[in-house]
Length: 258
Image 1 (tube, rainbow, N blue to C red):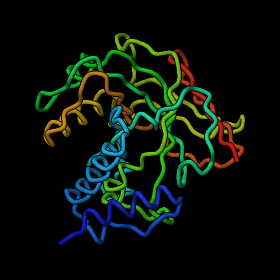
Image 2: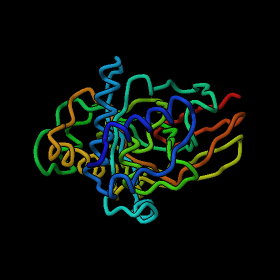
Image 3: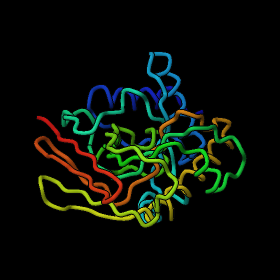
Image 4: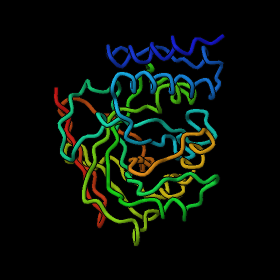
């Protein structure tokens, strides 16, 4: 039998000691259901230790990312309150293993999403606020060798989230055509549009809501949802400063300290 508790503990130890571990997918038989059990075991551990769940995050929302990881659909993980940082935050470079930045639209739910097979209209109606955000993704798996079962077990490469401003109501926002660009130390390094996020950020939210209902863990009012990146992940190191710019939507900044 697969030792879910031992795999979950190994991932926690990797995060706490800043020492990555080999892929866990073989121990899981590449079974995504078992990978989800590892993720949930660590969620239960952190809840018992006093961490508060603040929302969810979608990963591998683009077809290109799915192909690279051997996935056929997006994945998701849990956000904790202590992962959320304010715009302009200074982050120690070793706070997250293998830190890589993504530009996203963060959404705050104003109502529960409990219906099976929710539509984009259901998703839009449930959102109170949208804002630009930088996700600092991290992997506890060594050498960039993670595949989809590793990512799911590792809480969808969760790390930290920097919330930008301003917060806007969703009505009237054209998120599919919204553009975002990322500058690193003053130089442009990446850009993309909301179409890269499962076709539309609200389509990504609808997918997440349906998957969470199917798993008996529906999205609730007040949760923060990270909907997926507009462009490929960008590596970060000590001394780097990043600025995310989404014209007519908002901005977000973060810098990494030694």
